[in-house]
Length: 298
Image (cartoon, rainbow, N blue to C red; front, side, top):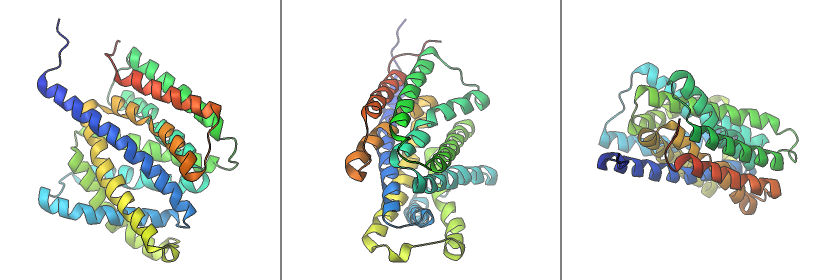
């Protein structure tokens, strides 16, 4: 029996892999930029404000050109609550207490497991042997990364819980997108267009801010990266990858985020890795390769 993939299906998978790999690097940049914002004296609420403002500015012309999203109100509210608010706000708050390596582990590293659990519970997705083995290898790598970096940061458990909550928010979003068949464009524009009008007045009137003391260039960088790249580009790419590959394979690829983020934070932010951390990077990478290569066997 031929195992060849029909032309359209093969093209769709290539698109999915390209989107997943691209979002991998955008997410690494998201974690590094968010952690850097803490060192630049911005509050988490300031970074969120720049994110929502940037995404809104970028989304309006796209919506005018391509059409406004027309999701039912309850579905739009769920997308905004999980992808637009839950994921980034928990992450920004968590990075006040925990370093980038923790964010990689507790946020992106836990995403495949949370997504898998929700997929089994709500999408009736079956676990294959390859998928189970892949997640086991990824988990071993995540544990080594945690062992290497968690001991040197007393009090970081508060950030870890917040980061884990952010990961759970994104796992719920991923499950809803798959369950409801929402397109990448609909989901991305919904998150970008509705978050700013809801959040910015609250930030302006009620939330602590230090944005006035931040250099214009620093604020502009976060405005562009958090808004255009982390919301519009990453949101579209991730959702498109889920559409093409499915949530399990996509989140297995993005499980590389903690390894790459931890390696990048070493020279960029001075957050060093030891032998266990480097071994964890290798295992996470191996688990990702195992999860996306070859055929699944039940």
